[in-house]
Image 1: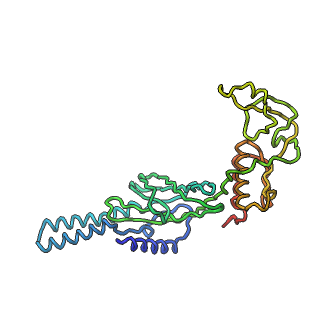
Image 2: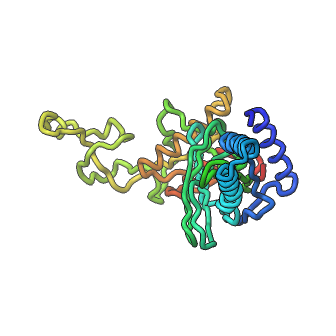
Image 3: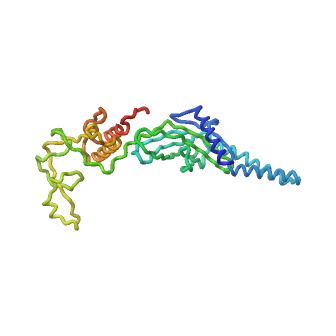
Length: 331
């Protein structure tokens, strides 16, 4: 079959399917009306060969020729059923869709559930359209399989998942059965963290709640240098005694108690002449830096305020606010 005709049939079929179903959530069953089947190029060639065998058998009145022709035709017809059955009655369910940073590959987890007593072989799964199918899996009887589909991202915000195509040519490759599914899924894309962002904006009035950087009142000892430690806290006398050739390293003075400076990441305090997306990327970098250093931080953007905290939940809430800045939650 010519590639142009194949593409036209796929487009028409996809439009017809989604005019009836649209975006779907929950578990989806591939019933009979959702599975389409057409002969492949090899199948069309096999059909032409059958016609030649039939004409030759009739012309020369060959009994064995008739037997061979009808045996091959039986295999051709049987392949229609087995190819269709390899895909029908599968169930599809969406798995995890974790957020990513812009420029990274979004990952959508797709679960194939087989609640029948028939093993399914060589099921190809990928987004549609795709230049080539990248994922193939088998699904055992009464079992399941997980396929992780990847999708490139470019900008922050919500990224809707495109439709998914499943197809198979098992067992003989003479026919191709396929089906479509449009999952009700979207990926949250965070702003890409700025690579050359300025240092964290540590500042604010002194507080006594234990949040932020330690003050200089009570000397607690010497510890290894950590990124972000003030240069004035470097323990030069101890550093001079350490030979780098024997594993020496920087050391800083550690203090406890005293005044504390609160780390506040305030989007509105950033210069307005800086590009909006760059400011969002810078805020994302500061969030990651604060988490990496274990510093509790307050976060403010667009009238929303998050108290000083740290951890995965606080990080996710701040990055979500950055990703959806100026974007409606339901877009």
